Amino acid sequence: MTIEPDKLRHFYGGIIMGGVFQGVGMWLLPSQPVLATATVFVIVVVISYGFELFSKFTGKGHYEMLDAIAAIVGGVLGMVIAAVTIILFIV
Image 1: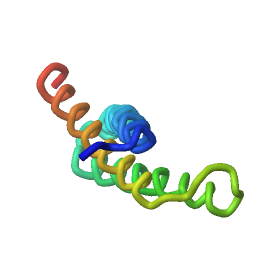
Image 2: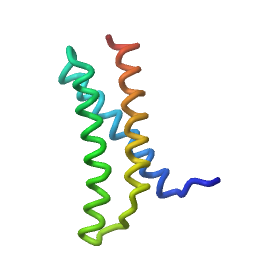
Image 3: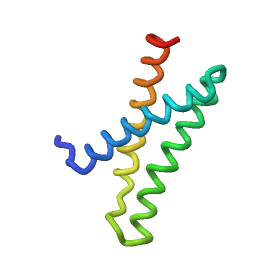
């Protein structure tokens, strides 16, 4: 089984997106990490699927639900990496 390069780009982009947003969320809401994480998850889902909807309605790009799913999975991984890093090394 091979993963398409396009899906990998969405996955890696999701890692970066999730990590950056999780870091910012935990910085903005240090006393409420659960709220920060839930908010970041919603943002990752909205951006990932929103990008695909933008491609579908404007014709700029190719709409594919698996691209959004790959970005969301990567985003969640990035969120976990950022949260663990912050908890272990900063808090």
